Length: 387
Image (cartoon, rainbow, N blue to C red; front, top):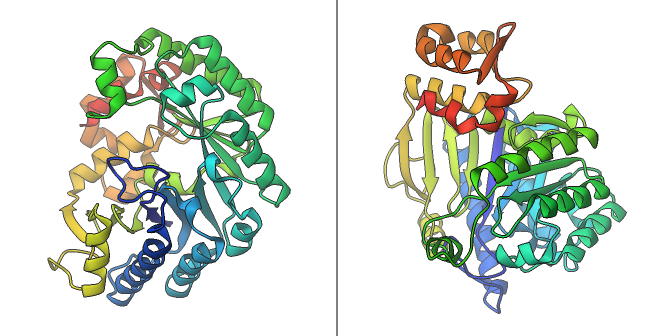
């Protein structure tokens, strides 16, 4: 299965990664950007660079895709369907910011083809949302879910963050309980990662705010695993839970299984034909490149491409191990590994696997290598074996 990632680089406020804020310019920039997206989709298809396997997922993510009107989203989906072989029941996800819920035409998005929503809730504690510099409120999270439900959405995911400055085990428990009350189909829980140069990172370095220590963060993860299990969710990936297997994120599983995916838009990334590449991060540069329609280098996939790296067989095998071990139930199948690389896991990674087994971080279940409960709690230690 192949996935498609669509990046919409527009946020509700200016940040280091995005180019524009919501103001009068948006009415001109978004239509121009959509034209660039459609040109890029056509270019990749027309030049026969694309993988020919069926598209099983389309993901509108990054920035704030919910700033797009439903008819604009439909234009992109229709273009992909017209050019590529898209599975009949493909998963088509759109990330939405709860702050825009009042303006979102959920019924229109459903009609356009979106069948899964991913809402960036982050926390159900207003003071923690303030620390995270989010502009939505707890009330808006609930309103977004209720409104989407009323308009017919039956597959909704919420993102939550733990390890926030000032967060305690009690407030984390409160957020988890609030999420469970909303009865969504999928939950993604991520430990806070400080990005260098951000205001929060500077505040932590200066001692102005204090992060929970490693033991507290580990306790938060353990609490989440137990609470979500009791709430009827299956833990299928280190950071992800779903009510049923068919509700697991098909798009993200493309990444975890190290399968190919297309990427379109400013800053989009892709993995095709044993190459990894990414587009320019500058939206004006993206528009210029797509208007010119010229490849800077023969190995580039799109006129918007600025970097391209060949993935060697060894690197691909390392990535398959690191990504596959994130899958709680599936792990890394020795059979699939052999079929893909014509070599056994133990031949390539005998020492690494032995270390994981001896440390109690991984175990063989039949011919599948999976992380143990201990391994899930310190996943990065396991993954580092394959770097």
